[in-house]
Image (cartoon, rainbow, N blue to C red; front, side, top):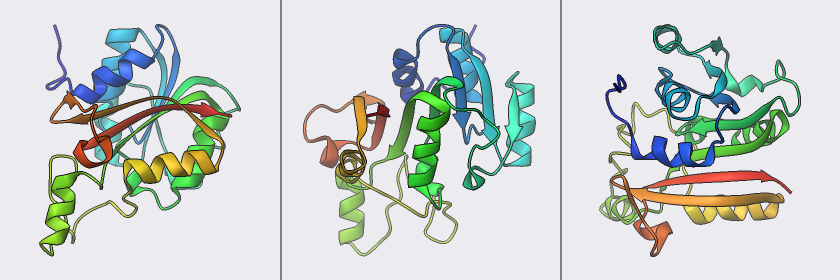
Length: 198
């Protein structure tokens, strides 16, 4: 029986792109819930990477092989193309150098999977127009305690990929766990990308 408290819709979307028995590196893996989910659903192997002491302990309790590491220092301990997929789930916006970590993802992995809160979501725009920083399910922190330092929109990310020769293989956009197919940059709260090198 499922012992993960909530199977988030983004977990299921990511799992659809991961081939069975793949080698996976989950960056900023938190308590290891996504890795544990993929292990159960897709029989993956690999590692999580996490900096927070409490989360590292939670990973161990969740049966996840975890490396305690600051992602800002890169992934030099991992060899080129040593994983089938490298995942960065809802962590990009907290990175000081997002471009570097995306390039590192494609160096150590054959493909990347990335999720981030879409700052262009209409509810976020409305809160900014009212003079307040957005507060939502995907952006749950107040301005004074947020770990988020680089927020972007779906259009921003796709321009970034186009300018750097990164191939977007697939995209899913969700709001409240439901897929968004119309005007995703305006109507989507969470973006999920599957990408590869050119």
